Structures are given as C-alpha cells and as structure tokens.
Amino acid sequence: MRRVTWMAAIVLGIAVILSGCGAKDAGTVVKELDEVIAKMESYQGVGRMTLHTGQEPQEYQVEVWFKKPHYYRIALTNDKKDITQIVLRNDEGVYVLTPHLNKSFRFQSNWPDNQGQVYLFQSIAESIQMDKERQLTTEDNAYVFDVSANYQNASLVRQKVWLDKKTLGPQNIEVSDASNNVMVSMEFTHFEFNKEFDKDSFDMQRNMTASLLPTTPTMLQGEGQQAAEDGQQARAEGEEASINTKQQTLVFIDPAYLPEGVTQSEVTEVKLGDGKGLLQRYTGTYNYTLLQSRPVDRAVSVLPTEIVDLGYTLAVLTGEDQKTLVWTYDGVEFRLSSGDLPVEEMAAIAQSVQGQSLK
Image 1 (spheres, helix red, strand yellow):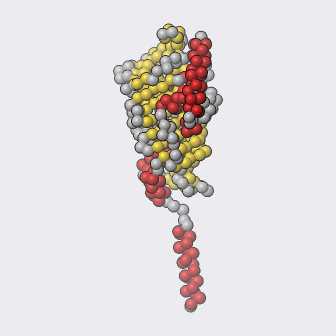
Image 2 (image 1 turned 90 degrees about the vertical axis):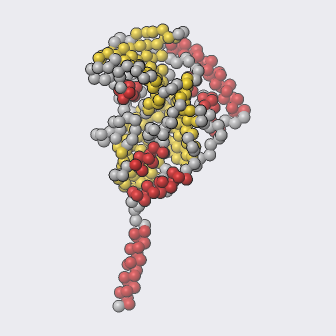
Image 3 (image 1 turned 180 degrees about the vertical axis):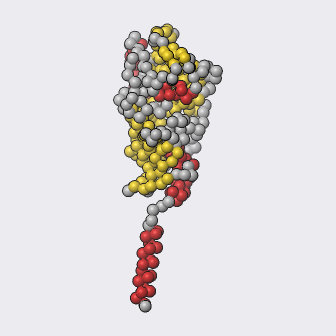
C-alpha cells in the first residue's frame, strides 16, 4: 500500500511539472505582449519587405527607428534601383524625404497612429491585441498568430505574425488577400527593444544630409558631419546636371492598373517652368490626368494634406473637390489629379507603377 501511495505521488508530481511546461495559450502570450509594450521606450528593426502586388515581386530594405513618445524614422531602399526614401516624424510634423533628389514634403499629421504599417511593431502588436478570434500556433522559437489585417489597402484582409518566443519581437509577417494570396511579406533580420539613439537622429536636415553618404546618422559626429554637408553640396551640383540631362530623355512610366471603363489618350509633352513633363489624360468611368516629371524643386513643401500608403512609398494627397496624389518613384515625380476618381482607385493606380518598365 505504501509503495502504491509513493507511486501515485510521483506520477502526480510529474503531471504537475509537465502541465507547468505546457504550451502557452493566446491569452497568456497577449498579456505578456501588453507588458512588453508598456515597458518599451524605443526599438530598431531591420529587414526586407517584399511586395507581390505588381507584375513581379519588388523587394525593399527596411530600417525602422522608434522612440517614445512619437518619433519615427523609416528608411525604404529599393534593392534594384538603390534609391532610398525616408519617412520621418518629429516635433515639427511628418516628413517624406527623397534625399537623392534633395526633396521633401512636410505636413501636420498623426501618422502612423491612424494607419497600420507592416514594418511597425505597434501595428503588428495591435492587430494581435484587437482580434478576439486570433489563432495561435507555435514553432521552435516563435509564436505564430493568424489575425485580421488592418491596413489602408482594403484588399489586405489577413496576416500571419511570427513573434520571438523570448523577446516577443517580430520575426516575420505575411499579409494576404481574401483568396489567401500573400501580397506583402516582411522578414526582420534584426530587432532590438530599447535601442539608444542620438538626440538628433530624428532631425529632418540631418537625415537629408546623412542619407547622401553610405553611413547612418548615428555614426556622424564632428568632422564627419561637415564631410556629409560637403558631400551633399557636391552631389547636389552634380545631380543638377544629371537632372537637366534626364529632362531631355524623360520616358513615361505606364501604370499597370487601369480602372474598368477608362480609356487613355496619347502621352503629350508639357512645359513646366524651365523643365518639361509628360501628361496623359484618362476618360470614361472616371476622368483624371497623370503628369510625370523630373523634380527640380528643392524647397520643403508645407502641405495641409494626408498620407496615402502605397507600400513601396508614401504619397501625399491634397485638395478636396479636385484631388491630387503626389509621389516619387525611380527619380520621377508623379501627380495624379481628378475630380471624380476615388482615393482607393488613385492608390491602386499609384501602386501599379512600381516595377513597371518605361513606355
């Protein structure tokens, strides 16, 4: 009898140990995620984003900096074209910077608080927190959540999120459409919570200057900063000649997407100050124009506007009755204007430009 009692105790003890080592449920992981967010002061993420929305996948190197309460720096670099755009938020507002053209937009906005972004930890975490029907599975070193997607692009409806089991930092994200086709994927190669940044890491001018050199703003100190400024001036002078040359060979980039019931006219050349642009008119179900030019305006624009996320860059939307969507791609500035084209259709046209060949 005593032997049976001891055997029962041993079995019970093993069962207790095993139950304590069992897999965590979704609620437990979400609670731990809440604690990580509450303690988080900053983070840095580095990885690769792939867009499957064009004729062929487009890959972008992504580097994300965040510091409380609202400082952001996101650098998006097109792998094939080696062109970087930076989205910056600081106390002065939100900037979309195109350093290689020395061009920037600035406007007042609470971005990204009102828009989800696949490369931002806050957006990733919020999608897990908000979906009460979230599904959780596990892999060797990751928790894998299947949840609803919440992005500006309404065709993106579901996403899978891989979180590191030890840190709960993001590893991978796959965003799918209603047919379960992966449209956007983000793979982080490095993610660090509570990263230390320099005081001026989120300064607009420093990011415009430092981005012209093969180094990051946190590495520029003293004489290095002066070298960056000298390099910016030399590049600006050289690029001015390049822009003038390109103006003579500007070629229209034809969007892959054309709304149903819309026809397009021939591309015509128009004069824009000292330069020129290429204009195409579209008529039918919707009426709009698309103007393409080499941007030569180097002044910062202060615009009462809103941001439209195109995935590969951010566009600037202005106007009320007559709306204009402005963005840059491959060294070309696009201006899509219409009085009746819905913003969703404008975004679809703009998104279909990336990856397109010259016409």
